[in-house]
Image (cartoon, rainbow, N blue to C red; front, side):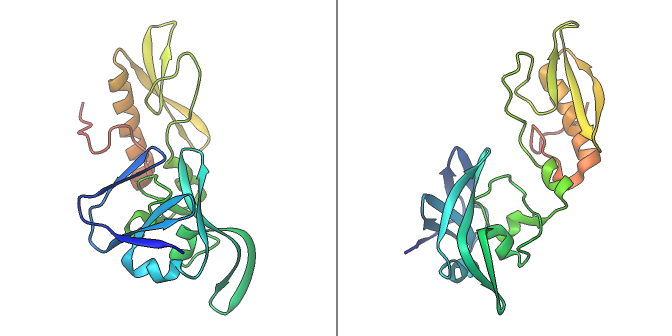
Length: 196
């Protein structure tokens, strides 16, 4: 049996190292197997139809149902059905979580995405490389003792310059990501002013 908790604006929910600040009314936290999910209050009755659980995937966790489900009058026998695809009514489409938190399934956090756009809204890859930065799109060039900013566009690596300061290189990446990827850009500094 799932347990439902009404969320208040200003509440903070944390799970698996990711935090979400509640900024809208009519949000509910639904406690399921191995954790919880955030959904719009209007979607809570839908969650009672299936048995949900949290599963960890890369740096986040998603909510899924294993087994059969009905979509309209059709019965589907799929092994894993993820909640965010069912809430949008598109069980076979790519759905992106704007805030990169897979267990935040509020409709305001979900958007349709092409596979390449969905891939752009990712965290910096985990790397144990000696010259990797803490920022996405930045590496350290040990030969020149400078930080190098780069971005991948359509399968090609584009250099954005070398910088003395790691944060300046990260800002250069952020500017390019916003220019090329728009709303799907995963940037290092959020809404920070990126002016020169």
